[in-house]
Amino acid sequence: MKLLEVLNALEEEESGQSREEIFIAPPNNASGDFTDEDSGDEDGRRGTHLPGNVLHAFVVPEDSGSGEDEDELQLQPAMKKQKAVVEPPHVWTRRDIRPDFTSWTASDPHMEDLKSQELSPVGLFELFFDEGTINFIVNETNRYAWQKNVNLGLTAQELKCVLGILILSGYISYPRRRMFWETSPDSHHHLVADAIRRDRFELIFSYLHFADNSELDESDRFAKVRPLIVRMNYNFQKHAPLEEFYSFGESMCEYFGHRGSKHLPAGKPVRLGYKIWCGTTSRGYLVWFEPSQGTLFTKPDRGLDLGGSMVVKFVDALQTRGCLPYHIFFDKVFTSVKLMSILRKKGVKATGTVREYRTERCPLKDPKELKRMKRGSFDYKVDESEEIIVCRWHDSSVVNICSNAVGIEPAGLTNHHSGAAKTQAQVHQPSLLRLYQEKVGGVGRMDQNIAKYKVKIRGMKWYSSFIGYVIDAALNNAWQLHRICCHDAQVDLLAFRRYVACVYLESNADTSSQGRRSRRLETESRFDMIGHWIIHQDKRTRCALCHSQTNTRCEKCQKGVHAKCFRAYHIR
Image 1 (cartoon, rainbow, N blue to C red):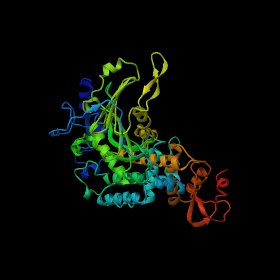
Image 2: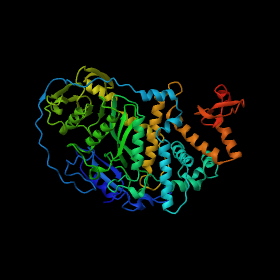
Image 3: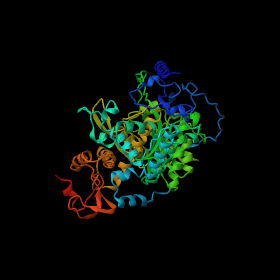
Image 4: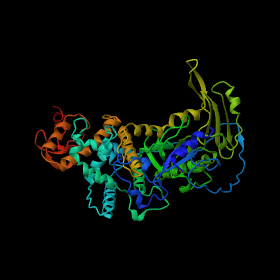
């Protein structure tokens, strides 16, 4: 089926209880060598002219492929239904929950170590794109170019320059990326043009590679980028703040191809792109991620649907740092009484909104009856055997919420705004609702940060936009660490990204250019008052101001400067 046919089918379908969304999946044979050939300028070919076997669109229900809806419209072969396991009936009682979890007492010595190092934005970003990751990408890119009879000779310094241009495109973008190098006064960008030649950038970008084609797993649609995913997940978890509260949800990596059939049917929340399962801290630090491949390539386990299985994988990743009483928050896409029971056995707390058909027939008041009662009314029951609570609360609408760790008490008051009467009133709110609203937004905060200045440069390879997403996620994580570690000299996300981009581009210009170009860069960046950090250097050099020996330098200017001369050197 064509994507246009899928969209037309969604428009003609009658609206029901469940919502659908569209996401792009890699081709079934994504490990094939042909997928590397679809490279070039994003303006050179139209997305509608791409081969039909390169991109596949899927229409799936919002509950992430549970396989329970026989009318589900999807473009993948139907899965054979497995016999349901008969479980003992749940016994529900009206009382508050009595959890038996230990209290949170863990400390985070790794974060204290990062604070003592006083890392600059570049140093924080290179916790994730570290030397091992950079060298791995360089080796795989050179290997792939050599297989195509091209002697690329890419170096780590050049790769960082390419990363700098991709980062810069997030806050300075042109309709065509080649405009960075044009000599026209309305488009020329000397920082990019002086750092690397246009044809050299295009050559490197076209051969950028992240896996050995001879060792790809044909059953993995993301085999082309799997080594990068593994490395990023390892680095994200290694440097993640150790916290009690985490959020789990879906993120979307937009697909930026030009396609004439892309449109939004009225009244349907359609989103185009790769769907990514994400686990974050409550502030938006990405701890773990996994691109969705659908139920055809990812088998749900433990009697859960696909979304629930991803939550369990995230918890397993968290517990590699220790079996601590983490508290995970997620929405109704993932929540079920079965999932709560599994997490409780793992010693993990969990709270989330839940759909009525996943409450294991918990006998709560009918939603219509609850709506006739005053706002703030609620009903609740506890599963006697599993110690899991299900609560139904009436506010603007009726909300179902489930938890294995937090109960009704202490109930509090919350402000309710009435749009018609334009007044505010206080209504009762159970404790688990209040905690859920405070802690669940981690994935949304991460998406918001990424969307502000996301990488704009895209190639024609199917995984090009995904690479931009990984870079943006690493920058978001580095900025989150900066907010934790640097209380005195915090910068906002834009200034943070600008600093990293400028250091990478100017460093490459300093090593690749001579005379007038390097002097112009030094003069213009020296006094811009943006992102100058003093760092230690092993080799003593002359101070750029007083000309005596020093073992410190400005990381951005790449000049030796004493701490006492640092301010005077950067002021005109």
